[in-house]
Image (cartoon, rainbow, N blue to C red):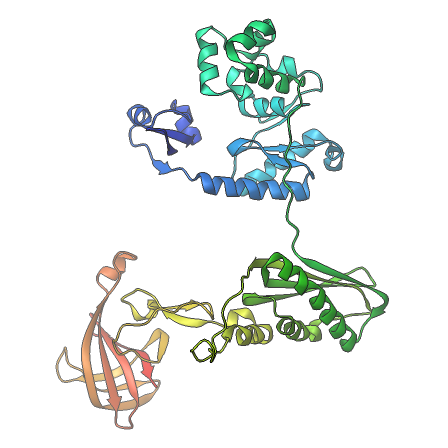
Length: 467
């Protein structure tokens, strides 16, 4: 499998799997040539935006967990400054092994090189022979001597000019006089060489992870009563809302962290249906969780963190001045119900495109847009799975039932409508090709209405109840 993207007027390979590389395919090769070399090639469209997003997430993680100085190195790599942090992980080699193991858990293949300059580390990681390469300080020239000139991050024009002169390795450049090289290739050519060898400095723009808005309260005396915790949470909300307002953000997920005197922590999480920064609403939601907090011998610190935030811009409010009646805000009610009942128990039903009734209903978020069902009569309650009925009597093989027995009780049919034929979904399961059902709506003598269907084997099942 390979991925391809358009460069100028050509479609070239952006990446290739190990099997494709073993067959001679490599990034930068024209797609037409790759199809000629390998028949049956699986070609996917490259996703540079998705790759950049993954790399940014990995860089932010590295800045939080491995080193405070991390930066992106091209579209497929990271620079990590290990100065002063390698000993925390057992040394450079153990730290590199830990990074590789982390990447393997994410499903990525990675290579790590440690050198005294960013240019040398970049070259060794991409053109070295081992997954982990440790270059001693001051030995960058020896380590880079056998590598091709492409390891210096030169453009195609410079590489082509050097190739016409017979220059292929970095070591050949180091042994040549600098003045002729500068006249023929320009200053940028020598700058890349000096940056790799440590003769010239290279800017390093580190990734600065964004910290979520948070408020920390410290108490002179530990608090343990519900009234004191309630007052503390109200104060935390009062300090958090201005931070959200200044940043133009709203909260979608809150975390209340209570640190007790025994240094243990208790966590309470609140999920909101939509982004809000209403002080009274957030305070009421937090107060509903106070009964679940066990203060023990007292709480010394209380921290309120907005774990998930979203942009929240001003929006018009419907009312008499706007010429429209105000609509009730269901998000506030959903949040209060979710805190007391659980977020998983609050949902709404939406139609799902399927011929089978048991697959035509799906759960949606409480504030999500719900799709409407077609105008076919459907029961209010479905039985999953359908329950078999016994002693069914019908006038004709294809006619509606006249009476049946369900759950030990006999029913006599007064009115019936049908059949409505429903076929199985053969594209999802093999047995669906022959799964044909004939549905009937029947009403017994007491007015109860049922939804029954007959299968091809003439067995009857009750699938739903109307009302």
